[in-house]
Every structure is written in C-alpha cells, then in structure tokens.
Length: 424
Ligand SMILES: [Zn+2]
Image (cartoon, rainbow, N blue to C red; front, side, top):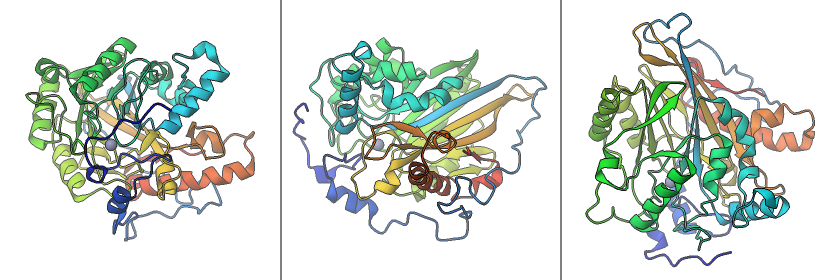
C-alpha cells in the first residue's frame, strides 16, 4: 500500500469518517458512540420479522403518496437514485487491485472499481439521474494514496462511477479539504474529465454561485450539497466559497436562486449527523424542518453517519436523513453491524397540473458491503435475497442486514406516510 501521509493534526480532533478495518480509531469512535441511543426508545419502530423472513411482518407500503397539486394525466415523471458515501478505505482499493489483476483489460494503474460497484448498476442505470457522495479528494494519477484519517484516493474510482451510471456526486464533506485547495481543485478537474457533475465544492467564487443543474430526460434537476464541518481543517485562506457549509439561510437563498435559474426539481444534500447514530440529531431535525418549509426545496437527503438513518415526511417534504455508506471498508470496527448495511434511495417525481414536480414515490433499497469472507462488493439486499442461486446460509447473514436497514429507515414511521422499503 502506498505510504500514509502524516496527519498534520491530531487524530483525536477528527470526526472519524472514518476508520477503516486497517486503521483503528478508538478515541473518535468512543466519542461518537458514547451514550448515543441508536434505536428509538418509543413504539415508532414497526415490528419486523427478526431474521426469520426476508419480508418484514408489518407491511412497509401503505397509503399512496399524494402530490400537492393533482398530477397531470400522462404528465412527465422523473426518477432520481441517491447513494451514500463513496469512502475508499485502503481495503476497498485492495479489492480494486485484485479485480484489476483478474481482468487487466478494464484496469488503469492496476485498479478497477467496477466489480465492486456492479451490484448498484441496475438501479443506478435505471434512474433518470443518479447521484453519489464522493467523500474524499482524489490523488494525482498514480498516487501517492492515503486512507483514514486524511484521504487521497485513486482517480480510477471516477470512470467506474460513470460506468455504473452515476451522473453526479456531491463533494461537500468533512474530508473535502483533506488535501487542501489543491486536492479540492484536482478532484473537481478529474470529475469534469470523467464526465461526473458535482456540487458542494468550488474552484472559484463564480463556480460556487452557479447552481449545479442535472438533466433528467429534459427536466432540470438542481443539486445543492452542504457539509457540517471539515474535520478540524479550515476553509482555504481567502476562499470562503471553496466548500458549501450548512447554513439554513444560505441554503434557502440558493434553492430560490436555483428555482429562478430554471430548476424544476431542487434536491438538497446534507453531509451531517452523528457518526454511528441512527436517529437524527436535534441539529439534523432542526435544519431539515427549516428546509422542508421552503417552497423551493423538493427533497432533503443526507449522508455521513455511516449508518442508515430514518426517512420522514415533514409537512409535504420528504427527508431522508442518512443513506449510510455506499462503498467502504469498516467491517472490523466495533460498529460492524451498523456500518455494513446502508441504503439507496429511488425517488420518483411527477409533474402536477400547476407545472411543478412533486415527489410521487420514495423507495428505499437496503444495501450492504459484502461480508468479510467474500470479495468487497456493493450488495443490493432485496436482489440477493430473491436470488434462488444464493444459499440459505448466505441469505440468512444478509437478511439480518436487510432487517436492520429496514428498521432504521422506518424508525420515524415513514412507511405510514408512503415510503416503501424494497422487498426481496
Ligand atoms: Zn463524512
């Protein structure tokens, strides 16, 4: 493995985001998990069949969603797929190296991340727009690479994300300036070269002030992404616009500006929450409630906590508090059981008679990073559990992850408001 860069600041000051299986982070993890309840104390959690069946015993589908204005008969629909952190611990890159050795034709610099991501491809490709969260900066071509706590990861991840079907990634995270402004700029330049759009960090003030608009079958979808902090680093000197930080007044203004720039759907991504804590923090709830009240914002979603957080509907606005990781290698952490399962959201929008697009469906797909005795892979759990070729033993292990993800997703009662958890 390439040498790890010496961290310029104390690891103890860093929010984890996160320890890999190779690098323990006991101080941070202890802090992050101490006295944090990870499941609701009340009765809001639906009863799920505990490991005995892939299908929860309480139906996770119920009332159909109702748009604020009637849907246009035969009107346009758009689907958006959203995933959590692309967090390239060295264990993930070790797998990409093995996959490249097995199939050199697809490799670049001896790396191929496509097989790791392949399980996401059917859902990601089927969506009209797909957005991931690129948690960390990329290194110069060929390295050197670093993993936790100060990341600099292979650029080979970018064409693999494009080949998987992603159109864009959010880039506002607590790791955005791990390698300073140079790393930030290098990352956005490499994303542009790969054909991945981005929002959340900027190379210039002009870029920061320009809304990121994605094209979904001709419908304009604005992506606005923000982070809670920078792991103890500061914004680059003289460049306060380099990373978009969470600030409700600012987000409301930028959503309005995106709408004025022609966006027909406005998505707000928040990189926030307490790591390894399932229930949203008071701060997450406060921010989400303020944003949900805006007529300019159609969906609020998030990542960063490394665990699946609940979905809720606040007023007419859906809030997906946290998708967890998308690809990572946190298996040997004490939080194994919580960090291994994750979620992908597929949100549908329909055009109303007033011309506005509104959310018409929220499907949450429990996913996981594969178990330790298998190659590192993104696993769509409903697909695996429905596969007759998968052994009962293997299914049982993954069914537990499915049930855990479903429990987190429904912890605030979203299934009663129309959210669907994809069934095997
Ligand atoms: Zn993070």
